[in-house]
Image 1 (tube, one colour):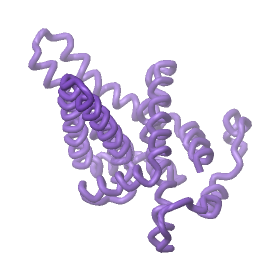
Image 2 (image 1 turned 180 degrees about the horizontal axis):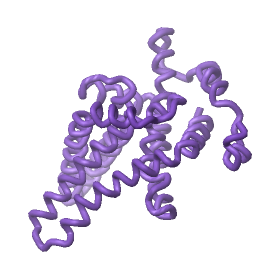
Image 3 (image 1 turned 45 degrees about the horizontal axis):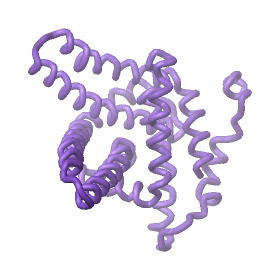
Length: 255
């Protein structure tokens, strides 16, 4: 399953690189408004307001991108009408997501230094426990935009499904986070346009779409959590995706 996820994410991103670049370009514009322009001013209040704007705008952007890029994960292409629909559908969830991310970052920023300053065995224990709790929260939050795009559920239900996706396969969630980090780290090579944050959002959409197959299998079969028959669950996906190799990267029109 992991191998298929990585392969599909890569080729879907390659096939839709111009869409990824467009979404990354929009994010760069939002970052410029929220971070770069206020930095030119000497006003601390303006810089703080710019930072708040950047966080909320990036969160809205993540949900809007997920609503659009989930179509790519589903094997479809993105049209301008899809982007307009994504903006409409992703605005409110994005603001909710931004509030959740802000609270999580603020709580971590307060809790970790506080417990680290306690000292002794209790301080070490509390710091370690807090770190892993916030790590689990972050690995859960990375699924939120994709889950919202796929399910369209209210905020609490979306968070619950995101947590289920994480707790069902924590190791896979960690790989997804690493994949997203690699997308961001590689982006300066292409002026932050590829694969960038939109590549990370696409990977999250691909990941949840595949994890969803197992969750659906569990609910339909009534089976206990455990090793899923991925070969069976992915049979249709593998057939629809088809064989892909280096030749398809260089000559995609010959597929």
